[in-house]
Length: 124
Length: 222
Ligand SMILES: [Zn+2]
Image (cartoon, rainbow over all chains, first blue to last red):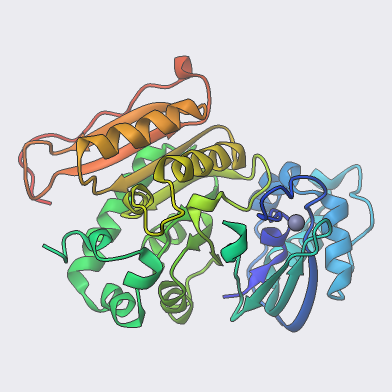
């Protein structure tokens, strides 16, 4: 188990009052892994409209994964792109690292592949 | 008595310590009951046939419910407040991303991410005030608000739970409706003390487009 970029692309800061510009959480990875999930075209196409693509490609770059900076206009039918996207979303994984809110700078620790999104005592 | 109502002993992140967490994957009886309740929850979710969906498992624990989701071909994200439970899920190689998170503090997701949500034996914990600064109603409202947002429109959420009282049922249902959900309670096998199961079935869309699923009846065994 690790955190994949699909999850990171959905996460936003939970700190009270931090409701603006609280996405995407910036990744810093100490340990990365690459999974071998089989390419699932239907699933990637289903997730396509939910992905914030520019945030994804920037986050991918932070951990050394190359994606085109813009989503191709023919993304839905561009199999080469979809495979690349599937790899970035589902196979590139963070085992140890941190996520940092771009707005309030709150740091979330990723340990054993699990981000800790629990509020600390001052945030409840 | 205490075994039947763990939420009376203490907060979930304390109750589900390492020893307790391991029980969940060592008892074949617990595992079978959990699997069966998850299958029923998945049936109540009524996802489009043959399409791989993206599902949120709220209070995923050691990943028993998630296994049912994986076997059905779905991708899921699991969230739990107990680090011990998540550690067991990780050791058992649950095929999902896991997050340590407190539902009562709101879900950490953007809008419209999930095709559905399930929760097995977890939501009753939200009805407790485990800390002096916990206000159950407020936490339930924050939770449902954030859940409604992170579901796609028309998605469903199904919560199997063990209500301690009808007041808890009313509180949860009332808060869910206030945050925009429609739906209500489905009680399977209402006449059987052993097999009776409560499912809060919610719909993130207009009530006119939703019909509450029918409960299972009869005296079937659990
Ligand atoms: Zn923040």
